Length: 149
Image (cartoon, rainbow, N blue to C red; front, top):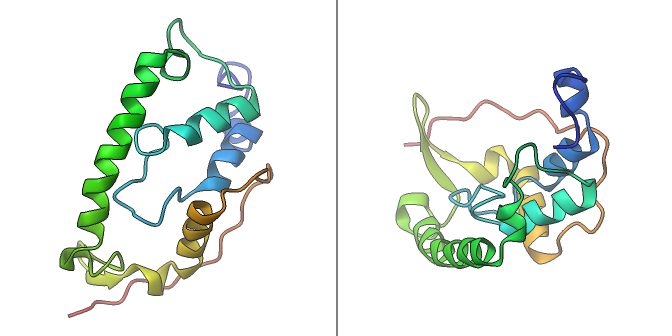
């Protein structure tokens, strides 16, 4: 944590450098089956905590970053799960990572709806952001998903 909810409003906390840094890195990968900065991309959590001088809020909370055994396990788990997630994302079920079934809409092409978001995700994989901006990220509006047959 970088702020305590007892001392700051939620708005101040969500506008903090810590949360701005997290938002600026999202999505962490174009494969939406790998969305988590803790489990799927443990290096992201370590970078954000280090960059923003975040501190644990209870004893032992920092072991996820400081305990070599836990770090090794997370990195190994992440790598193994990535293999499964990549095969699934490239499968016909997801139409090579473009199409998902959305309740009440049907099948939608994510690259049509969130083109700008996937550009960011591909950039993260190719060249991670060295120094993400700390101000609030303004994202463009998007169109309501269209039903695909």
